[in-house]
Length: 99
View 1 (cartoon, rainbow, N blue to C red):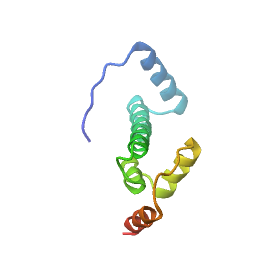
View 2 (cartoon, rainbow, N blue to C red):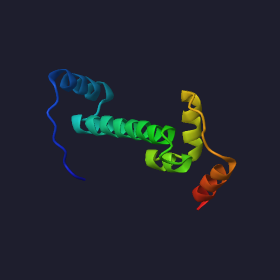
View 3 (cartoon, one colour):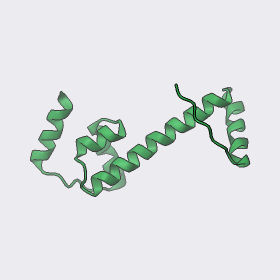
């Protein structure tokens, strides 16, 4: 595991301490959890953007986000993002997912 160093504003430090106490976790564990959730969310946002700009396929967007194609379809549906793919493209993506 590599080390990352940041300088957090005082209000963030207070919130982290509050979470650590409330969750009965050490500060480092809370910070790692927050970073993990944030990175996952940003990867989903990034992959959605790439998909909407037609830079990546549905399967590639799911791969970038680290989720299944089904989960990506659910997110697209929740956000009202239309599919801009052909039936041929869907079949290709599912075949790739099966490998």
